[in-house]
Image (cartoon, rainbow, N blue to C red; front, side, top):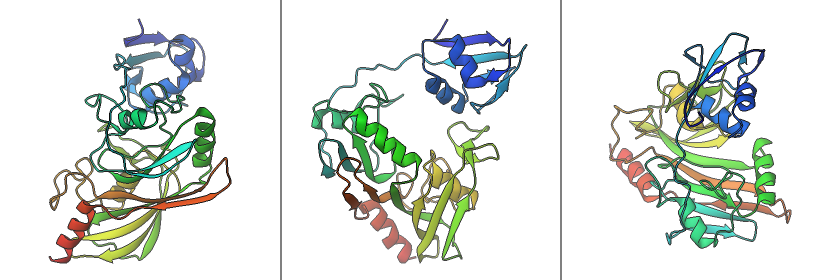
Amino acid sequence: MVNGINELHVSEVMRLDVFISSRIDSYTRSYFTGLINDGKVLVNGKTVTKAGFKVSPGDTVTVDIPEPLNTETKPQDIPLDILYEDEDLIIINKPQGMVVHPGAGHHDGTLVNALLKHCDGKLSDINGVIRPGIVHRIDKDTSGVMMAVKNNEMHVKISDMLSRHEIERTYRTVVYGIISEDSGTIDAPIGRSSKDRRRMTVVTEGKPSVTHFEVIERYREGTDLRVVLETGRTHQIRAHMTYIGHPVMGDPLYAPKRNTFGLEGQCLHSKSIRFTHPRTGEELYFETELPEYYVKLIEGLTSL
């Protein structure tokens, strides 16, 4: 059995991700790492979310492999706000509400569908048919600058730059409450929450995560921030701001019972990106205007 529940019995000490990939050869080790991170792997009946966890003889590992999604991702003629494009990469200003790639509940109408049409299918395929061209992502309700790549050579180079923190990404966000410090750094490891698998949270066994912020403006009900990511973990800004007691305004996952002030998702905008083009050596910088939803929120907070 592969898709569905797989029960495996351990006979020697081994890393969890290595053990699973050695017993089920239908998927890659990185795929199983993703399942572990998503809480779909149990060791002796308990959820383990660390790929490097050591299993021992006598342990029972249960792996829940979901049925594959429909992998036929079709090109769709969806307008794109393109900031830059060449033979290797494309920089887009993604609107709030657009899903980046197909997944459960979102089989079309995504950024990937639009990119497949615009780029005539010429996108890197390292991340498979569901996520062609996607080298990093932003959440559905996060707006702003995002990069996609057109070939595997560029995908590898950009991925390496991201891992070495050589691509500077800045964000703007409005958070609940008044932050008294003019600037600060949140250095706290992030991992998936054991209570709600959709959420990320600060945990001692999480991945190193560093977020820098500075105050742009303070309002009676919130604080407008400029944020620079040193690392790029899933939900990093949303999780770190929640950790310091100032969740992102309008966030349905991390602040579900707070006043949304008319927002239809978290107030989080990818404002700019700066990097050296791996092929040409040119220094590139792209910055976007604050979107309408962000401007309206600021106007509303100013009038309170």
